[in-house]
Image (cartoon, rainbow, N blue to C red; front, side):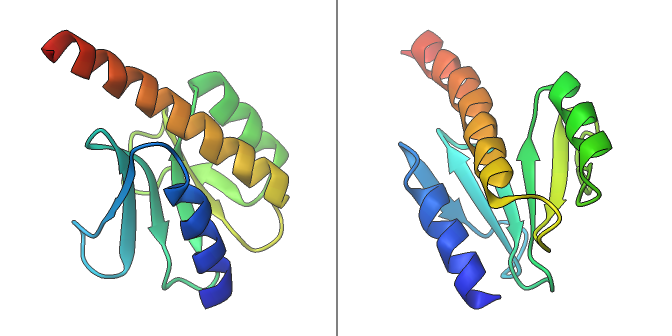
Length: 117
């Protein structure tokens, strides 16, 4: 579990301007870009779970394809998915989902910061 989380954390922090915070307590690592969340990792769960922003159409497709993908826990179910990292979702898909989440949030947050500047 710890090794899996560390690998995940390293990947999430390689994203440009990514920051890690614990606003919901020590068991939920929140990864943000420009102050906006793009990933929440329940790293103490067995197995680890990650919640990611998703295009609504893609969210539905991923849920229909993989048992380990569910509507985002305590999130807007249209725009967020929670992925259980138990091997039912291939690592390559999880990484693609992280990339998509980061892109969606960074693009929107970047537009906000450009308007504020």
